[in-house]
Length: 455
Image (cartoon, helix red, strand yellow):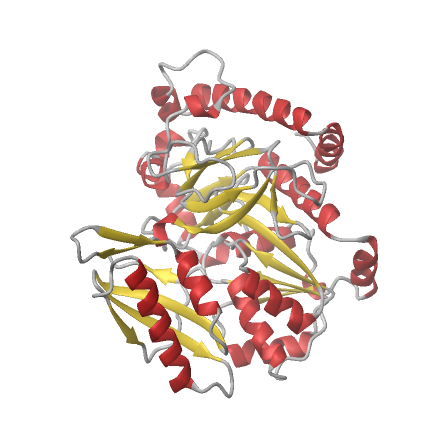
């Protein structure tokens, strides 16, 4: 098996050679992965039976999705010893989080917020690639002075993630601890589902040098720091999995006055991209392919927001992920990023699954992306967190967590007026906007979704 160190050296050499070398590596690895999938996965053997002998262009591949792959799980996986029943029995036991399934796989699950629970396997070879990509991200986002300050505080780390079940972030941390790569004394894990006062008390006690967690949860903690209830001084704040809005980025920097590292990942590819100083996310394009596409899976031009994005992982051998509809809306930068990084630059705009649809007065349908609500409500002062819940085709409830001391009556008036204007602009002025008594709610995975469509 190729070591993490060898992969790091190879990755450095490829980056130094520039975009052409990255594209060449991508083509080679795609062809090899398609060959591997055909040879070892009955599902892909059937799906690809009419394709050319060698495939270097992902556009030649049919689109796949979580629902289909999970329905064909036993035919999809490349190890005949792996069955969906055996994996489900394994993840049913929370005591086995981070343990090896069949002695050779890390298992993680998705929370199922989009309606389909995923079961994913990572073998040792793929895990080595993930570690190499994580080291690449750290090397390109942490300056020598920041690294020195982390080491001076012995790298004390606090991770705030969902700790129930085999969700990816917690499973990776548990596996790293079991393998001796993450020492319990210098690393603490707090539940993202803990009441906010409890999180504040625990953080005030442990005072981490590196604070890591979901962007929405870290933004809430930034509000507590600004309000004077949280008193920590992390050297680095690392944001996991979710795209980060500019409003949250400013809030976190203002609260902690520190180095913010933004990362983008998912169960299907634990390391997708890392952030730069110019607010862009740089995609590990030598190890994966992200294709921004419209609803009909035709390419979205660079500089425009896509409906969804197709993911091809070039290192998931146990479960090949090839032209997989990830559901995120992204924008691909059309020109080189001013930070100088040769990897493609993107911004994540939310999930296509979170698109809200409303009836229009003219009989048509108004479709509004989550970013529209996010931009709108972030402009209203003293809102720490919000959630737009569609409870009927023509009705939404707005859940709000207000900052301490906010005038909630005036705040709601501003929210109701702004929401009404947005809906009217989309021809859906008959949609009613209700004020919710309950606060925003977390998903089983510990995150806060900006919008929750009606179903």
